[in-house]
Image (cartoon, rainbow, N blue to C red; front, top):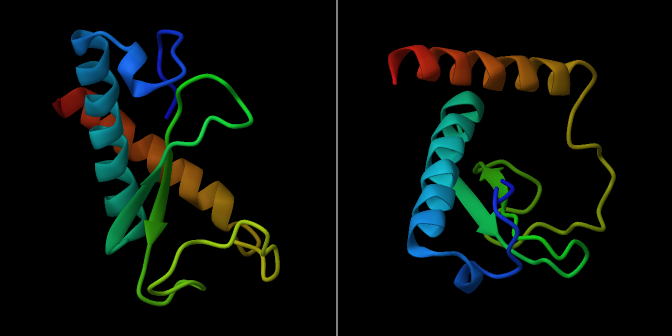
Length: 104
C-alpha cells in the first residue's frame, strides 16, 4: 500500500491523510484476507530502501512456511506461487475490488 501524498513516516501525514491511508490499508487487508483465506494479515512499514511511506501486507495461514514466526525474506525456495497461482490471485483481487466499488 503506497501513501498518495509524499511522506517518509506516518507522523509526516496530516490527520486527514493518515486516516485516508489507514482506511485504504483496511480495505486492502479485508480483500487480501477474503481472497486468500488468510487467518491473519501481517503489516510492515520499513522505508529503508524506498523513502516513501508504504506498507506491506502479508496474508498468513496456519500452513505457511513460517508458522508462528516472521517471514524470512531471504528464502526463495520453494517459490511463493506455483504456476498460474499469481495470475489467479491478481484476478481474484481485481474481482473483489470491482465488486466492492459497485457495492461500496
